[in-house]
Length: 230
Ligand code: MN
Image (cartoon, rainbow, N blue to C red; front, side, top):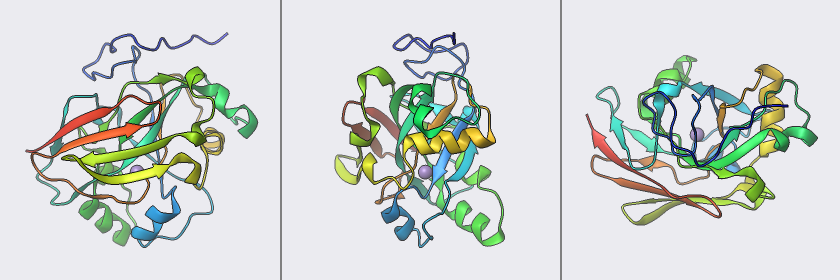
């Protein structure tokens, strides 16, 4: 019997105030190009398999915190995403079993230094720097998976200073949550506390010092962060 992760308890023992989690976060898996319209706006091809990358857990911040824009980038974009919390260890998980490994769902924002990412793409280099700065992974509180019968029915949106910038239905993902978990678990053993940012719909754009980002989703808890330039 796997140990269940309590939902709705305060924080863990490191300085990452994620409400709803009281364990250390594990791997922060992220999926690129998982909505066709976003792939198009990035002038990228639609992938044949999920595009998988990682952020360090030190990038995580909770609701109400600040995204800090680093001097190294002049163009940091918001990417609102559905985030999955893994609650059960698994390797080579079947698509048909995958949702049993989900403990909760939350909103997240995959902050991306687009200028650094573009340079990395040009040079064939990894995205770790473009995606991995401290505070580049805002994460909201989790809704227990048992309260969400079908993640495909969720929709997510992002408002910047009160203006709607991104909106998408999870049903439009190229690879569903179940397929993403199955794929990721073919590479990594998934562990309780692992997180997966599942990709962003179209509408990504640069943020500025002083912006307020509010992510919303059906059945999910709002996530609000403010942007500050270092
Ligand atoms: Mn993303």
